[in-house]
Amino acid sequence: MQATKKKKEEQAGYPEIPSYLIYEVLDGKPVYYRGYKDVLAKTKTLEEIMGSSALQAEIISYLLKVCYLVIDTSLFRIYTNEIGSHVDKRNNLSNDIAIFDKKALPAKKVTKHYPDVPAKFVFEVDLDGELGTEESFTEHEYIHTKVQKMLDFGVEKVFWITTKTQKVLAATPGQNWEIIDWNKDIELFQGHAFNIGHYLEEEGIELA
Image 1 (cartoon, rainbow, N blue to C red):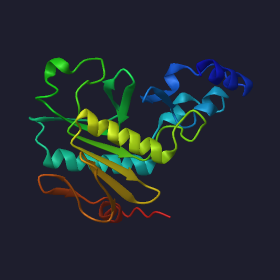
Image 2: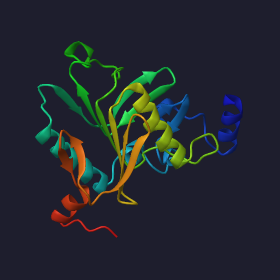
Image 3: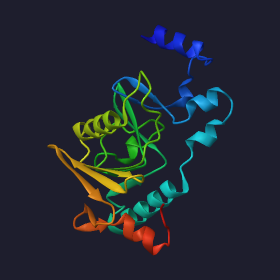
């Protein structure tokens, strides 16, 4: 399989894809950064494809604000900036926001490596990986597989925000998955909620 993939890449004018273009590894499959082919073709730099859009950054900033207001940071760690998660040897995942219980991730476990314990809550905003290629996942497969992988690992709740549809997938263990309009209040923690649509409206941010 690897030899066939490498041959196809060479025939397409690409060298073997370097590891720094891998966004994450899901079920043993590398998921490359969206736009990685532009880097290989030297029409874009790595930095250009790794950045978030202004809308993604605004939503992440808002969610972080909510988290810091309602979550006790003496008990929990709130991480962002594509925090990695080492699930097992076939899965190294990235998250836009991950909130860890300090009992699960004490100071001695804060190292130069990915955390190897599950977060309590995870937020994802849109998709950063290149999907739909022959060796990759479809968008539906990717989201379902990644969310289920995180829940199986022990994450208590996953929120996946999709700016195109203005929806939020809220998933908990036991197949309790719900797709919610982002203009509604969505519970985060102990009765505390967030409302992305309301926040964007307050900020005067209009979406086409």
